[in-house]
Structure formats: C-alpha cells, structure tokens
Length: 105
Image (cartoon, rainbow, N blue to C red; front, side, top):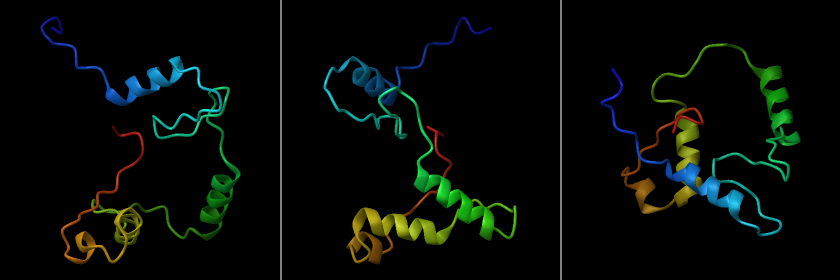
C-alpha cells in the first residue's frame, strides 16, 4: 500500500540540528529545534519555568481551553515584541497572529 509513496524531503530544521552536532565550536548553544539543550544534550526545566508553572497552578480558575483564535492578548504582545507596538504593520491591522502549541512543525 505504501510502496508508491515518495519520501518527503529532509526537514530543514532537523538538518540544522545535525549540522550543529557536527560543529566543533566551543561554547555553542543549540536553539535549532526551539528548545534549550545543555552541554550534555539534556533539555532541563529552567527555574524560571518552574516558577511560572507554580504561579499558574496557584492562580488558575478553570481547566477550560482557548478557542481557535487563541488568546488575543498573547498575539498582540507577540506582535508588539516582534515589530514594536507602534510599527505600521501593527497599527494598520496588516499583521495577524496564530497561536499554536509548540512542536507542531
């Protein structure tokens, strides 16, 4: 059944990760796959993340989830961070934001 399927092209991001692994530069930090890995290749849970998780647990009032549009305030803040809140792309309404879980590539 699957014999007629062609292989997908190599993933460009994973290719960067492979190039990173071959690079012998000292002190490099691997951010190619969107996560921090330490010198042993482990993805540690940073203390700031643990603190943020504690705060969320302490203040959450619901286990509901966001609608398909995501959180408007998050999108607005992300665009402001990327372009600047007063940038024409934001003030003209030409920019749109999509909120998705990480690792959905």
